[in-house]
Length: 329
Ligand SMILES: Nc1ncnc2c1ncn2[C@@H]1O[C@H](COP(=O)(O)OP(=O)(O)O)[C@@H](O)[C@H]1O
Ligand code: SF4
Ligand SMILES: [Mg+2]
Picture (tube, rainbow, N blue to C red):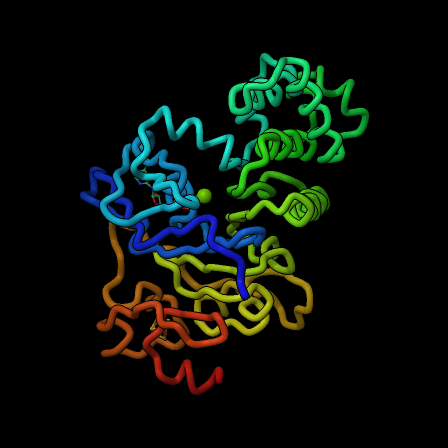
């Protein structure tokens, strides 16, 4: 039986008022992250992944947006109903956050060990000494060599990959149930990317933390994620167990992403998806993917708005094309 959900997002819609009118970069998103699993949220840049992750953490208002519908439950807690102070207590203690630019998220004027220790003291109320010991232990846990000495150094003396390890150590120092990592390896070299992903996977397994891994790069999700949700134009278009979905995608968008991404087991040449992600101010009618879809059929794909349909074997996708089903099953 599958583990209990630790994070449940239902029907999430986020709106912004822009000079091009009101836009909804995220519309009707459902996500379920279960205890101890890694869920990948993948899709090209501009598909609404970061707007989703900010909404989950309750930080939408700071970006000028508003949540017009939906719920975000972290265990028994309704994230969207929390006041700023309660939310700050939850973030860091129950939810760890890791972003693309570790050095921008770290305080440049404070040694990294102190930053981690501060977080531990704030959320756990332990003594200074215990918090420092925990900080060093976490730096060792993310395999920073000579951790006790390096804990006293400032962020600028860490390489990008090492700084991301520090961020991961800080995010996990209070033993959160959920880690949200938004493009954690995007700013890193390919070899460093691989070691950071390996580390995340190992920590997820050893500490039992559930991870929401957000990435535009299917290659990063490949082999790491227990489940994958593919996002396009603010909607989840396909979801399922990571291995099944990435080896045999059903949705034309996922198929296109796969053909455009170098990955293990690849036999064919890379083919980018034609065109680009439309702006939320200018969404196509019917299926939002129709202007780029190789299976586009006039009178159907540009008219009917597909719903996310459950297809069995834990998979669902959003496509109205009957041929899609016949071809793939
Ligand atoms: N603060 C904002 N105001 C208006 N539009 C925004 C804002 N933040 C993001 N968007 C728009 O929402 C869409 C999705 O953005 P984002 O979630 O950052 O994409 P991703 O993380 O998948 O690359 C983009 O078209 C972006 O321009
Ligand atoms: S509904 Fe039509 S345009 Fe949309 S993904 Fe399916 S085949 Fe492509
Ligand atoms: Mg993003």
